[in-house]
Image (cartoon, rainbow, N blue to C red; front, side):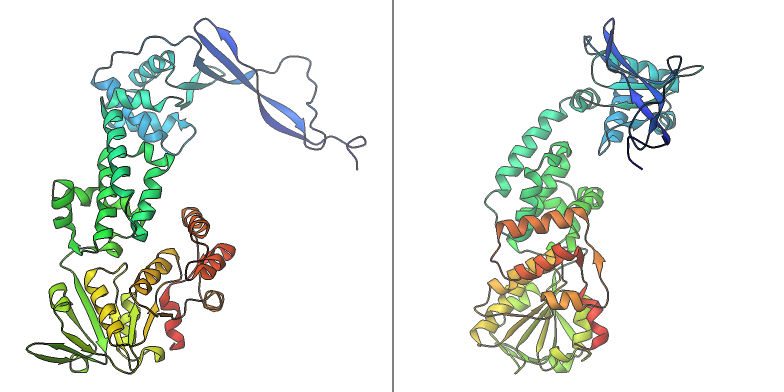
Length: 433
């Protein structure tokens, strides 16, 4: 059936009028209109259909309102609820304000003031008594300044300093944080979050391992400040343990075969099966390591490391096995350099995701020769279980490929991007590989 010869199938749609001036305000109306799903024709009506919604904005903005505590509180809730949204549903907004002791009548009075100042638009449901249904913030910065005076200037200054601080850094995680701080999204971050991101980038570059409270006190000015920000930080850049922020002191775990030599004696790793832990100072003070024929086998994931040390992974048998604990620091680098001096084989095994690839590249950069284990596009495809990549991860992989198309494991990243999937190391354990 063509558009010229069909029976119209009517679907009701919300149709908005153009904006019209109403004094210092402008408004537009929405009506429910039956429209043909085939040809797009509106169904004729004898009379103008009643409006169901009215959206209002300031045509001539009034002077900014002088806010009291209630006005600042309402402005703050508006800003928080607007993050990541085009419009704020009024029901949830008024409910949040009621929990803060602000009645709906007072909230709507302030919304009217913000509307006249040009800081928001408001939409009302018509029919009977008009009811506020949603608000949108075309100027969130003005409301943010009202809620938290001076914060916008503090945010801009914090962002400027943070961008300067991370610009010269080269660690993969520091580069990721630098890209985040350069993005438009960072313009909405509160100053403490911006400062924490810059401090974490510098920490990743340093290769240190610190307890959470030590890092927080040293870099953020208070031992408990990082804990308050940790949830949001990890949503933005991933687990902080991966860049050396731990609950306690840094420890390097070693297992398998081989011997550690100091001035005062030798430690046979097999005597401490399945593995032992060395503080950073102990590992950095080693004179020599007698590597076994299987060389050095570097593993990112703790569960996989334990399985390797217990002989459950064929490829790790006869090797000295080391846990990188995410992005490795100075102590692990010392281990890789000792392997290089001994002329032994270095094999690296990490998760098949962007962080895993970056960790593998970092470890490989400390050695003249390195082999990647279970990290090819074929391994990605043959893995028995996969996870879907989030939109943020896909964008980061795409950016990495654009910036470093010839880097090691770029083909694996391309396969991840094409498939939209990533793989944890653990899925290979059942195969004994």
